[in-house]
Image 1: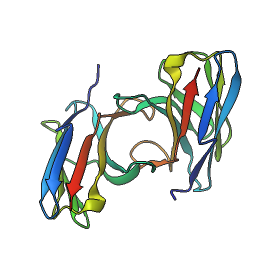
Image 2: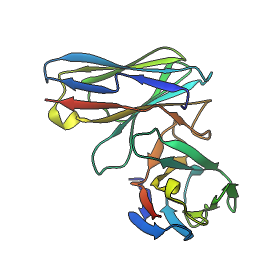
Image 3: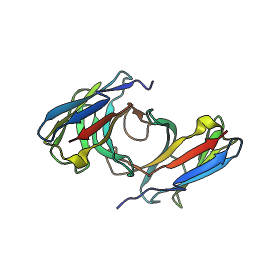
Length: 113
Length: 113
């Protein structure tokens, strides 16, 4: 059974703090790793799709790294703001299937002003 | 606004009813997806369509019946559902397979009574 684990499950930080979360996934048959941000009452929104080992992507204050050999990805948020409050989902796409993304349970971030 | 719309946004139905969920995208994407989000569970893929052909059925019970008449529209026909089918149903699309980011609709909140 393919499993994607995210930690921590939830996180409360103060405005201005930097934070990071972890996504663990099977290291075999890797094809792509997705990160999504899901705000309450909105649609999940893609942040990054990463395919290469060692890849690092950045969007504003948010960045992500990928290690496919050991099966993990980190998402970093620098200087958290209240508008960063959301659930952050990662999803694993493995080779040999026909489009099936396997999602983790998400990390819910609450940024206090 | 992601370019993916879903109707209705909320649906309450009895176990003997037949209803349909509709998803529409005008992004020119060729892959469309149905997901189920149950309380306290990861987002779970149900069906994948690529170029109007179903390429993935994630062991979904036959009381859920998808239909993809063209690349822009996706339906989920529901009949004789159970209360445990109550969940948020999300539609998504992507240019092709899951090496591309997915664009999600706002979801349909389904309650089965």
